[in-house]
Image 1 (cartoon, one colour):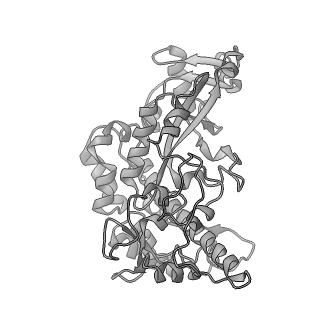
Image 2 (image 1 turned 45 degrees about the vertical axis):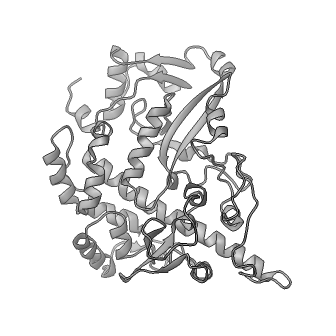
Length: 400
């Protein structure tokens, strides 16, 4: 099955259907799936939701598209029905010349991914920044976002964070986040299907030989699976060690003595590949922020906050803009002894309103070359500094 196929693997769909955990939606092209079967952490995240509920329950079930590359996915990702119809017609009637779509046979030439296609036709030259909400709404309308998606982006509880970037930045981030969430659901379903096949291949085995597949696997937080938490969901998601944010072990972890704990709040789909199958760190590069950023014009860097509340605020805004996606807060613990051994130029402090901070952030965010006095920051291992909260456009509007 290709990555562009159905989101729920066929055998997994039949298994969930037999257990009353999935059903076709009344609207064609969608299905309803129990929230504890969405992704790698949903069983723990929604552990208080019973499996023994009606398929009509909006509390227990989420609606997702049947197929990843589809008109329905455009709607799921936040586009209005009208915009989705317009873009799907273009995608479905692709010209024979030029680059191929990712679903077309490989001819060795250029390829356009479904996500890039959508973003390329949603984002435009007209953007909005600053405090004028009317301009933001005009921009969101021009992007073709559905009213509910617009309201999520414009939620007044997150005005401070929203205004730190531009309208089109948050449109892109929201669409990418929701698409990554569907890919995560797809990966989790494929893993469950593989486990079902392994069970069926054993002597006397059957994919559903016990009906409910009880589990006793312990999570990394030390919390045992409850009697209604199937072990199959845990087994299908290797590499993701997670704690419930309010659990005793999570609190102890972030308050560990002799360590500095840094935090980063983000959507779960954005950390795919962070851990390997042995639950060890595999690719920390997934946590890098794109360039340009506050302290680099060309390199992607790691940005964390020592303030847990900041990470919670970022994660909360991601959750507000999500559809069925989960969010995570990454905790990075660094031994104090490792920080204390650093000295200039390996460690530097750079805070607003210092002149060096102002110039470095302006030059990095606008892609300007650094003068000699600022180039040393390029080789610094750890910068302890103030985060900027202005979009790139405002820096471009400033004179040097």
